[in-house]
Image 1 (cartoon, rainbow, N blue to C red):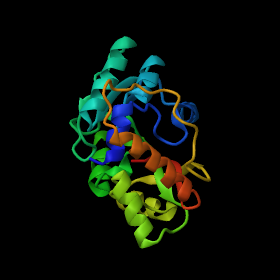
Image 2 (image 1 turned 90 degrees about the horizontal axis):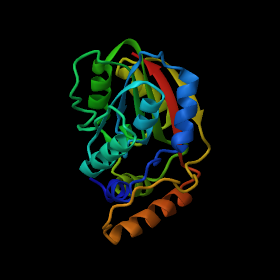
Image 3 (image 1 turned 135 degrees about the vertical axis):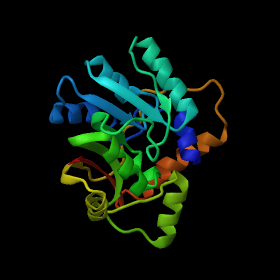
Image 4 (image 1 turned 120 degrees about the horizontal axis):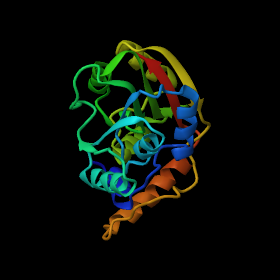
Length: 232
C-alpha cells in the first residue's frame, strides 16, 4: 500500500476525492436513485459518503481495503446511529452475491485497482440496467515516461488513463451509456475540511502530504479528474 494511502488513513481525510462531499451530494441529486436503491460504496474511506447516503434513507453497504479506514468508518456509523458496517474487501474480490446492488459508487478508487478485474466484479454485483458512478483521476495532457512513473509510484496507481482510454476500458468491460458528468480543469482543491486524525501519526506522512500538494501543483496542466456514469 502506498504512503499516500497510508497518509489518507492516518489523517482520516474524509473527502480525498476531487470535489469532496459537495460534488458527491450534487451527483446524488443529479442521478436521483430510487428510494429502494441498494447502494455499494466501494472504497468508502472514513465513510463520509456512505454515512450521507444512509442519513438520507438509502440502503448502503461499504467496503475498503485499509483496516484503519474501516475502523474510522465504523466509528462514524456508530456515532451517527446508522445500520451500516464497513467490511474489509477489495473491489477485485467483492464479498457479495451476483446482482446485489442497483448503484455502485467509487470515488478515487478504480485507479488503484487491477481495473479489468475490478470492472468485472462491479458488473457482476450490479443488477442489469443499473449504474456505476465513479470519480477518477484522468490525464488531460500526456506526461513524460519519467513523470508518469513518479506519479504512479507515489500514488500507487495501477493505471492513469486519458478520457478516451477510460471510455475504452469501460466499453471493453461491457458497460454502456457512458456519460461524463464532470470534467474539471484541474485537481487542485481546498484542503479537506473534515479529518479524523489518528492519535499517533508517523512523521514521514507529513512529508507525504507535502509531496502530494507539490505533485498536484506541478502537474496541474496534466492531471485532472472525471466524474462518469455508465450502465450495466
